[in-house]
Image (cartoon, rainbow, N blue to C red):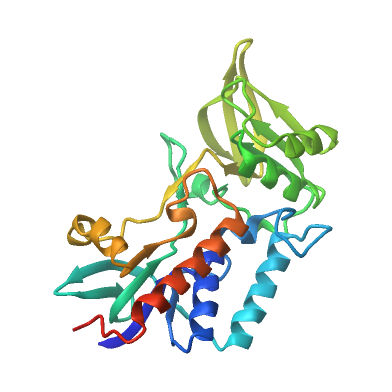
Length: 298
C-alpha cells in the first residue's frame, strides 16, 4: 500500500493546476487519471476566454501546453482508474484498478460524465457509432454527423466537426437554444451545419456502417442517416466512486481542508477552464496553509 500526503483524482485543468501549485510548495502529490490528460478540454473547438491567448486557442493545443507544464514542473500522471475513495480512522483510502493508496488529504477533480441517450435497441453495431465526446473523432472528415443537444457543448462540437469538412445536423427536442449567442451565430453562418428544433429521436437502427434515426417533429416523422451520432444532452458530476462513509463526512472534511472538491465535479453549469484552474490553485494554497507544521494523519 502506497502512502502519499496528497492524492488528486483527475488530470483535467483543475487537477493539473492543483498538482503544479503543490509542487511549487515542495509537495509530491499523487495525480491519478483514468483516461487521458485534459478532461473535456480535449474536445473544445476554441477556448476564447482563457487569459493569455488573445486569438483563442483550440482545446487540444491548450492540453498540449498543460502537458508540457506539468512535465516541466516534475509532476507525474498515473493512468489509473479510481474505483473507490473512502475515509476511515482519519485516513483516505484510494482504491484504483492497480493498487490501494492512503493519503492525509484528497482532492477530487474528476469532472463530469455524460447523460446517456435512451436507446431501446443498444446493439453493439449501434453503440460503436454513438459518442458522448468527440476527441476520438478528430480524424473523421467528409461524413454526416448528427448531434443531439442545444447547449454550449453541442454547438461547440458541431463547429469543431464541421471545420473538418463534415456535414453536421443539430437536433434540439425543444424550441429554445441554450448555447451562448456567439456559438449560435457561428453555427448559423456555417454552410456545413444544419439546425432542427422540436425534433425527438424515436428509434435508432444500424444501417450501412452508420445509424438511421427515426425522428418526430410537429409536422410528422422523418428519417435521417449519419455515420456517427453525438449525444450532448447534459452532464452530471463524476463522483460515483465516493464511499457512503465519505459522503457522511463530506462537509466536515471540506471544512477542515482535508477534502477538496474542485472543478466541474462541483461547479454545476459553470464549467469553464479558467474557473477550474482557479479552483485548483485555491485548493493547493489551502492545503499548503493547512499542512504547515501539522501532521494531519496523527
